[in-house]
Image 1 (cartoon, rainbow, N blue to C red):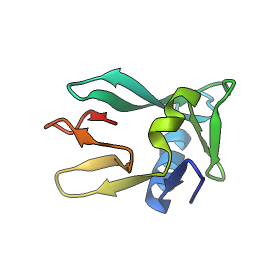
Image 2: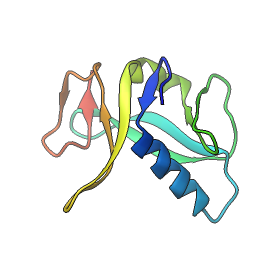
Image 3: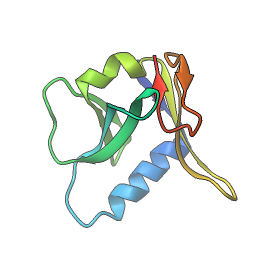
Length: 111
């Protein structure tokens, strides 16, 4: 699945739909932010979206949506969101052409 801001693999879209289907509250989708934190300065952050905020970029996944906060758009342009399940590691991952480096633990990045 693709958008000019963010490409979302089918595995990631499937996982977003699963997370939202199991939720115990009514939400519109997931909100994606880029927050200041960590040793490299920035981190990807997901939360449940209960409203659409002014300036949100919406990525429609069929039965679910990802709402990208407007301040995150410059950091995410051209990125790909994936979801992988491996023996010792499971989760969402970003391939972001804007990243100039990551911290050693992989929790934060810089542009």
